[in-house]
Length: 239
Image 1: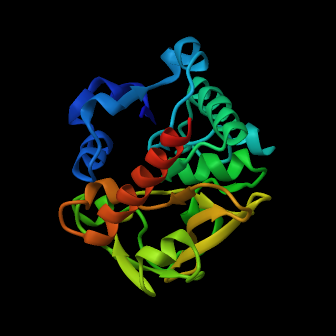
Image 2: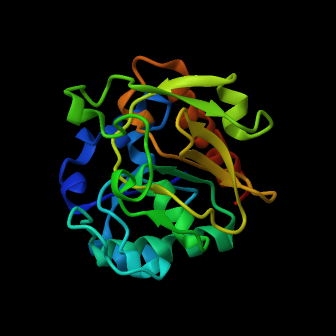
């Protein structure tokens, strides 16, 4: 089994110390099964097929990919990563590869399915609380608000019963939902917090929070990675 963990260049430099890497290990993956990849690996990655793809947090998605100009100074994008990950997403969907998205990952996936984003929720919407908890002095590992499961028959609904506490480290969010996706959880103030494929698909889950930072304190957050790995193994066994 081989899983690609798509990250930014700074995160890739952390290697096995990346929290995404460590979360997958904590959920039962072997180090030899994981590969941190970034835009600089585009040629290499195009030549490989993976048994799972994890799209992680990081830079904002270039608004031009959803038909908008940049509206705020705090929108920081990196187009090479966007181009790399959209190509990786298309390849994964064509091969029906299990996909997990985190923070930027849910936003990139939504745009890849034709959706749009709030470029900054403070400027473009009416959040009822701070969604970037580090602004409140909270660590990345702490929870700061609840998310409410809206589809109990979803993959997330099989893990979380009703609601769970999560951390929150984002300034953008899903606006118009992409075609072929369904919302499976929302924040207390109504923002999309999780999406999944609306069609029959082996596994496509993407969440707005950072479960990798909470695997040691929350069985529910760890279970997200466990379920992802299970689906990756099932697919690898069929190849």
